[in-house]
Length: 202
Image 1 (cartoon, rainbow, N blue to C red):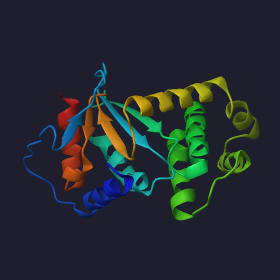
Image 2: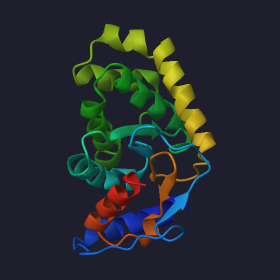
Image 3: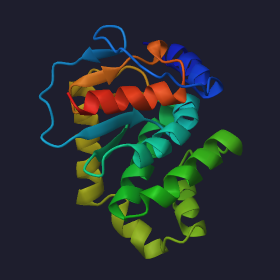
Image 4: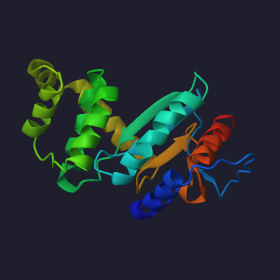
């Protein structure tokens, strides 16, 4: 599904706060089965980009999900490199650096704010470095991680997952490694959460 189409339905989700007493979710309508093995642990995997406005719109829902799913559910994020033109790989590296340094939860809203609200175009490693330093990461920590084995390995893994799941648009959410949500079928935030919980049990 095209990014713009996904964004349209995410906006519908955000604008429709009513809930459904009973949902009857169907394969091929509300979710698709992907040709990947199921995860051993319940998992919510989001393919996203800091350069994607619809991922920014989905962020509050993902935060709500963390509060409304079982405690044993693993959240995994994969930042794709194909959104944002030439800056796409740099934004992906920004996510990997923040994750390796253990500050991803702090820096994800910071990067979304810079790009979506301030419209700051991050076009160089130096610009990226300054954002980290301005928000509490030491210059030595940034310099030691930006091209580290751990960051490069994480980027390689994210690229491999993006290819394995044939991701062509974001945001894309996959549950338990097997079930990809069809956003066009969702009419409210609560229904989205209900669908996720339904798929987590499959």
